[in-house]
Length: 183
Image (cartoon, rainbow, N blue to C red; front, top):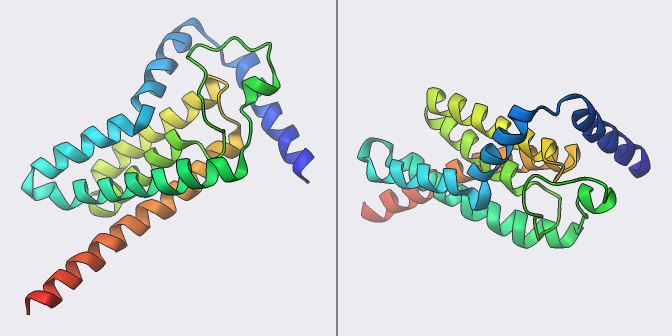
C-alpha cells in the first residue's frame, strides 16, 4: 500500500514537473512559497488583526493556530515520521529555492496556511476565502518547487483544518473561562 501511495506521489510530482513548468511560474512560485516561510504571511496577518479591535479575536486565534502548527507539525510529526523530501529521492532535480533543512511530512507551509485560513473562515467568510486561495497557491507552490509530495500537502491541509478549528474552539473556551471567573 505504501509503495502504491509513493508511486502516485511521484507520478503527480513528475506530471507537474513535465507539464506545468513555465518560465513565469519559475519566477512566481518561489515568491508565493516564500510568503509561507516560517508562516510569515500568517504571522503578519495575525499581528494586523490583533491591532484592530474589531478583528482582535481573529488575530489571537491565528496566533494560537500557528503555535499549535509549530508544536504539532515541526516539533512533533516531522521528526516522528522523518519522511525525506522528493528532491533527495530524485537528485536530478534542480531546485529553484534553497533546500529545506527539515523533513517533508506534513508540509508546514500548507499546515500553517490552512490552519490560518480555516480560523479566518470561521470568523469571517470573505477573509477566509481569500486566505484559502492564498493557502492553496502556497500549497501548490511546494509541489511545483519539488520540495513536498502530494501526500505531504494533503497531510498539511488535514492537520491545518483540524488545528484551525481547534484554535477557534480553544479561544472560545478561554473566553468562557475568563467570563466565568469575572462573575
